[in-house]
Length: 217
Image (cartoon, rainbow, N blue to C red):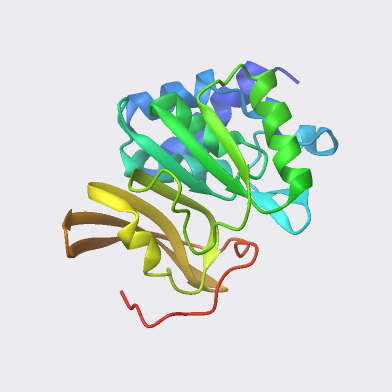
């Protein structure tokens, strides 16, 4: 397989048609090598328009979902990022390319180890991986400029809203299969948040996802 041709095809045939046009995001997709974060058994699927299983019930989002979330979050070079669900480490690497530092929380020790090895192999040095359950937020390092939740939640726990700086953004996929909404929530003031529905999708639920709270969009 010609890897660079496959990467080009992924970007031009899957990602651009999904309204991902931000040049910095497209550059990140060239620079952060997706094939370095895919399990060896799934190497042939590295650039395919599909979720890639990681074991333990987890999966990588398909490339267009990753790219669209990265675009909508508009991460800036000075910003700190919290990711919930490290998975293979790929989304953390993309966020780290755009931001100053990423803290990613992974509940599964095997996936944490996978992500650490993948990030080291890719020479990504501005990501910290913590072992723990981040499904109801992560107080260490809060408040954050950006929060990305790499798995579906039936409802977003309100605690995440409190862990965001004013001007900060959350990307979350909320709802139940087969139709979920990716939303971007911006904290516009101390007690005010703006929610935009970006696209519909259907992804695996976040590990140890909490029961729904009373917060409604």
